[in-house]
Amino acid sequence: MSLVSTRLNDSQCLVQFSCNRFAKILLGQTLIWVNPSNTRKWGKSKKVNPQITSMEPLELLKKYVRDEKLIKHCIATAAVMKSLARELGEDEEKWWTIGILHDIDYEQTQGDMEKHGLVGAEILLKEGVEEEIAEVVKRHNHMLFGDYEKPVEIALQAADSVSGLVIACALVKGGKITEVTPKTVKKKFKEKSFAAGCDRDRIRMIEKLGMPLEKLYEVAIRGLTEVKDELGLS
Ligand SMILES: [Fe+2]
Image 1 (tube, protein in one colour):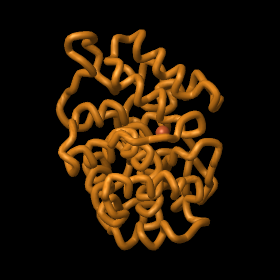
Image 2: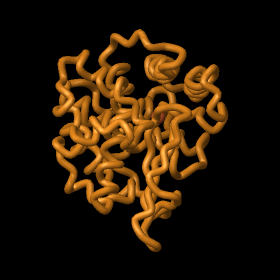
Image 3: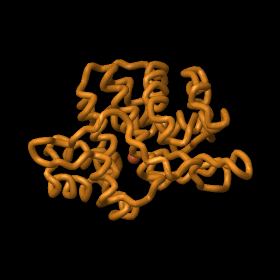
């Protein structure tokens, strides 16, 4: 995960994340959330796996992650995953859960890409999360893996990166995601220096699922709009 931030003015700062490892991008200078106390959960209460654990995904994430910025990155990724699942006729709850949990080991592994994902899978299995989810989390480290064929794995690569790009687009519009359109994202996608840590190649992977990039932007905007309060956007 990397951070993208911009200072809009002295009193209003927004922060967002992209997940291109080691690529820290600073659009501005300050990393502060507009509403760090906003911890309202999105959507209905969901359990990881009612048969195995009673802990909700976000609750489980917070057991291992303290950084509010990282938690918000995971919510953003999950929101795009859920929106993609809806579009592709996949399991929305499962894809949301994977998005929430995909970086659960990030604080423990401290950016060590030899361990990232592998440790996450160990944590999830220890916590009783189903193996399928742990496997996707393990393999999402694209520096260790990359031979993605499963829709959920491809979607996670795209969601992890496009979430940061779309939020960066919102930040240049005063934090208003409601003003971001697929056309906006398409234009910024082509500007390599804009949110440069948002890996365009990972975003392009969505085309393997037969989804054009502009459709991905539309789906991502829709998903992120549903969690705009949690992300400090409007
Ligand atoms: Fe991530």
